[in-house]
Each structure stands twice: as structure tokens, then as C-alpha cells.
Length: 87
Image 1 (cartoon, one colour):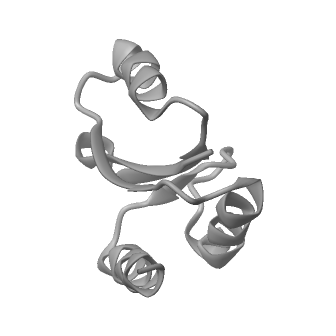
Image 2: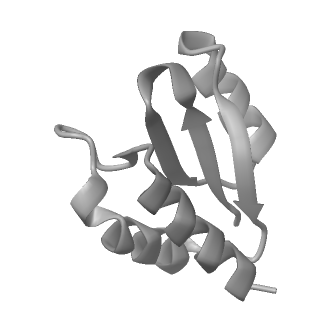
């Protein structure tokens, strides 16, 4: 099941999640936040890959959340490196 990464630019956040159906999950999230943008999908991802990304980004977590992180140059740089290594 894919791991997905969403951008919520107006609120300066990035979400890392896991789902069987990315399109349906994106549609659900856009119901409450139509400005969400899909940044990346790791098709060969799994729950462990999602958890690893959560641990990697732990220091940038938005308070009170488990899957939302502050959108910053550092977070995007780390995600870019992780995504480039999966090819």
C-alpha cells in the first residue's frame, strides 16, 4: 500500500500518510482542505516506510499531531533525498 505526502502550503504543513487508495484519501482530505497538493506517492511503501518517515521528521512535527509536519526547506530537502534514494 502506498505512502503519500501532501502539502498544505496555506498552513505551512506537510502530511505523511499511508493508504490503499491515494486518490480516495486525497479527496477525503480535500473535503476539509481543498488546497491540499499531492507531492509524492511511494507506491512500494508500507506501514514501516510510513513510520520511518515519521521518525525521520519527528523533530519537525506540528504540535498535537502525528502525521503533520512544518513545511520548511529542511523538511523538503530530507524528503527529496529520501524520495531520490528509492529509485
